[in-house]
Image (cartoon, rainbow, N blue to C red; front, side, top):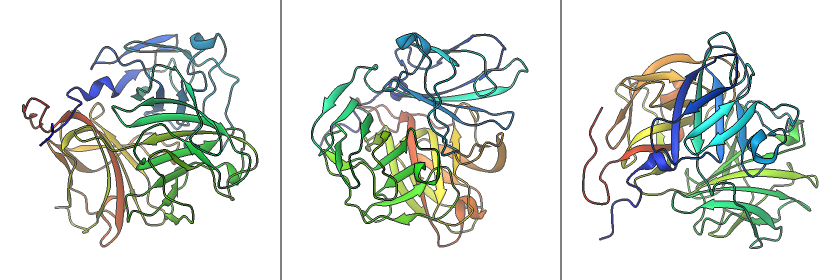
Length: 354
């Protein structure tokens, strides 16, 4: 029998962090592993209604990376990539430094949360596994890769570099700011076939006619989202003791489902396959203790709100909410989760409960 996990310290690959706006360039230091230099950084103003903010090191994550403005995207909107601001000043070996913006740092004391993933330190390579070549950086240990690529026509494949089929792919047309530039959230967790949601909307899933991802490639864009343009994609493959992607069926009870992940969660995203049901993101920094009730929705600019709680446990999470958003009876509800600690380390040490 192999090791339970190969990642004893998940904070080397993913961390959440909270901070307060200061109205000047602000340095944010992660409280976990000090060697997490973010390659994919997602920030939201918790206090006020401003757009989500996403940058990555494939596209120049900060002003310091290439002495030029860092292009950012907004998961709640189909807008094109914005390259007119130098709001992200630098990413550091243990955090990042912001500029001044209501989105990520202001002078009114707004509270913020940042979610950070590590890929390959900004070092990219060309992947030719697909019909279309992609520029990739890969963290195979953590099952995460970032791609940028240009489609020639619909349904062409691109290489993702993970070596196993990704469970979740999130992609966006970078320079298309209309209904065809939407955020696509592909997943195979419901029944093994390819389905997708729209990250910027609160609706049902769509059944995709495209082939499911393979260990080397996925279809870079379908006919409804491609028009000879550039894309960015974030690919995630499940890693035991670090990440888990799946689905549960709601039971409409305050004594809701227990979802086994094999680790104590640091971050959980939940979305019901039902219309007008918000996406939900919870994390261990905004709620260091149970119940976990502070929610942000990728599809909404709204400030953080409070919902009936879920609990983060040593080996998964427990729904303690009878609402339709998290626990609609008979509804399939997808989730993706990343670890604070594995349930059991590679040397057999169990994690502690909250």
